[in-house]
Length: 184
Image 1: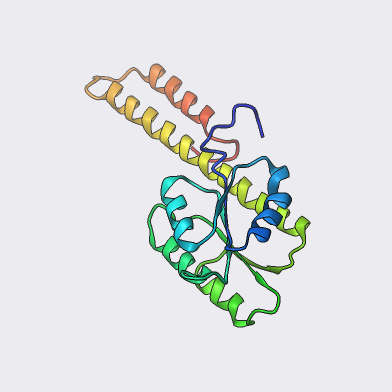
Image 2 (image 1 turned 45 degrees about the horizontal axis):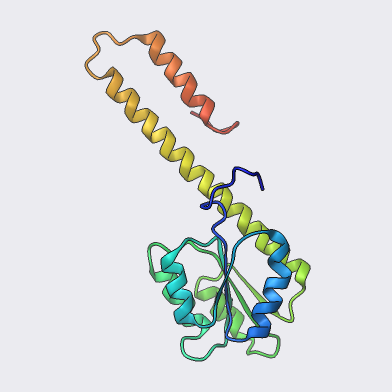
């Protein structure tokens, strides 16, 4: 990641599990990604954390006392500010085979059984982190383009006739902002 990465790009990973050993294992596997890792020991704690800050991804244990993983995921998907956060469910290999179906039906992006392969988990998490960064870049680009277009509209409103050379220069500048290969 570049030195100019913003806090927004480093939104972090929410680790939700009621077992301390599982949280330690997740931190050991994901620590090398140099992204903020935030712990939650319950579904309730996870919801509070999600309302306080933006996350790139949630790793969510299925079996927890109180609000289980499925209920937590359903609550995450219900809220406008969290509905697009990807969820990877983690559960014991001996759990009911219907859990995977139920997890995907709840809106999970993926489902892994414990013990998980650390390389596979890290690779999957890396994909979601990259996707998160690209989405943030697109949001910033959209905001900048919208702002610049509003400025252009304001500049040329009422000009009779408009200064076409200046307008073409502004359009070239806007095109420069658009990633290569995107039509504008």
